[in-house]
Length: 366
Picture (cartoon, rainbow, N blue to C red):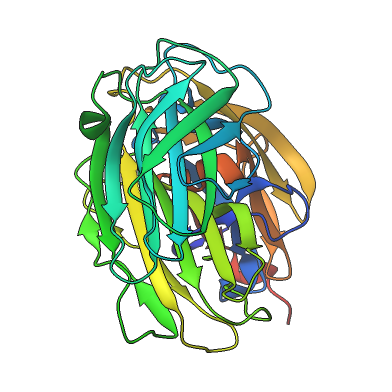
């Protein structure tokens, strides 16, 4: 028997599209790309040497409901559960005033100011304000963030969302816990889309938050959420009245240092509007030696051939249970990772899966 080597083939890794691993990351190789009908896989390498420890990745513990009000001076944002000491709180806020829009001057959690500070502000140059605040390494705990505002006049609409984050940089400074930030102030004339100028992150495994307040004047207008891996935790909230206003709040993981942090939105249908956008990324806990295992299954057309687990930060050669593995070009190979895509979409670039194939010319159809 004389084998001819077919070389190596690389799997794609991303959100599950097979229906076999819903909600998790999945690596897939469509074997129709192999140029002979019948062949063997004699080696499978899963390289996770760049995979960070999941226990150290930033995560969103809980999100508040969208809080809306009409006070020029205060707004209360309520979490479903009491926050945990040591976690980081992030608040995205939007305001619009008929004469002048108020801005936040302070925040408390459980009645305590703690480490709250402003990270980024898109100031009121036309009619709207958006801003992001943070309370890193919170000492106080509670369910309610009370926002104190000032500088506004006339009638007012305010809206905000709170996030509790785990595995973030422990510091007492709101500006120190932020990696990079950017904003787009409202501008005249209005436009159909808006985006902040991209800024490169300086650390890996950041969490990026973006918030927008958009004065539309059109009650039937919508703004589509940014695409995955963005998570949109506040749906477009349209204020009633003669000048409808849309609020949006989003977050996403940013896996690698040097990633261009951007935030871009557009109206649908294309209609001019006044925009106020703010965005910031927050630093994770410094890396520690990786130890958390990631479980996965190796499957052929959904049938499990082997179940294993890998250790984050350790690359190794994984041999499937039967060797060699006999395959044909009408099949698909799947690696079904038990890694939730909603939380760890940023891990996909770190997972490299490669398979080596060979074939016997005498085993091919005549």
